[in-house]
Image 1 (cartoon, rainbow, N blue to C red):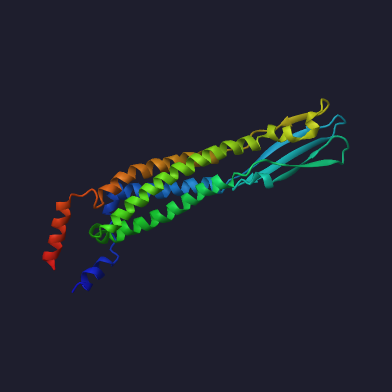
Image 2 (image 1 turned 120 degrees about the vertical axis):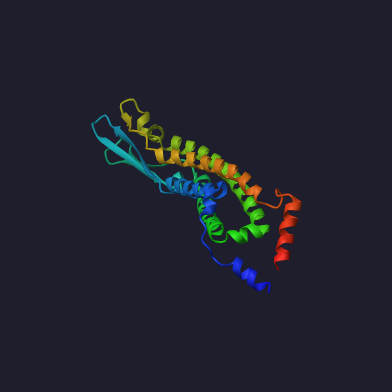
Amino acid sequence: MEAAPVKKLLEFKLDINPLKEPLGFIKVLQWIFAVFAFATCGGYMGASVASVKCLQGKEDLITVHFSYPFRLHQISYQALTCENHTIYETLRLTGDFSPSSEFFVTIGVFTFLYCTAALVLYLGYQSLYQQNKYLPNADFVVTALFAFLWLISSSAWAQGLTDVKKATRPTALLTAISACQKQAVVCTAGALPPMGRLNASVIFGFMNFILWSGNSWFAFKETSWHKPANQQGAAEQGANMER
């Protein structure tokens, strides 16, 4: 006799009413902002440009391409030495900022996956979610954990982005070129690499932190730790009477 109610709880039944509640509506926002966060960071590609003009009139245009995950120390470029028109020196960018960027993107991807699973649970198995006290408790713990992870990853990536900007600016390229230390050589820095997408990724990261922090309260209200003990007892007594 107990198998029938359990089987009924496990049946998928679409109900969009949870989307009208803060817990479900905010989950949709979290799903969207997670996509924006890891997409703006993970898909970035940029370039830094500078030029070196020797005394003899020979000019060398330098273009350095870089992208996610920003292992800049692996990116090399060549610059004219101005000692001879055919002699170039090989230089490298500085810094490895992949830990912070990859951590940020990883949190975004896991957030997307968890939000997808949570929405399926909210919209398709609402009865199971309401009658099983362990699911709301686990949902609250995971929600609070993601809020903490978004704070840590966004802060780390914000600092990493600052360092990426310093390492990839055209003036940093010219500082490493030996020919630019000579008075007769004209070195010109190009425009700064466009960083709008990366700036947006940091903003989305902190917005995710705000969303998950706020949603922690609504998730907590669904747990057995928040609901009065007599209310839980009444619910269990009602369930026993139905049997």
